[in-house]
Image: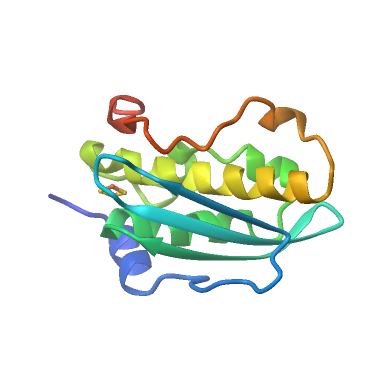
Length: 146
Ligand code: FES
């Protein structure tokens, strides 16, 4: 399997690993099939993601995806973070092998789950997240394989 230099770089030197104490929002998602788990911590102030950290118990592509996703949303608004798709994460990594696309889905979902947590803690409604359910049991292998 061929991995891009960027995937290797973010796998070997992941950015933003760790946790945030008293995080504004925490999201954890898992993929039932491979058993990998990703947890994202957000520090949000005035609608801006001031800081973000992750802990990923998973494959190299999941670690690289978490690392890249945190880099992509750091300093951005909630709205911008919500617009981040797993495809954008994979593209920023110069691509992932098709069988590894589901690893990037975890990153998108973990961020959304953390924002759901943030919204609940602050009693606010984020319209884009209406109906979003962190999807523990669903198999994402079929989507985004092109
Ligand atoms: Fe499941 Fe990578 S193999 S997240």
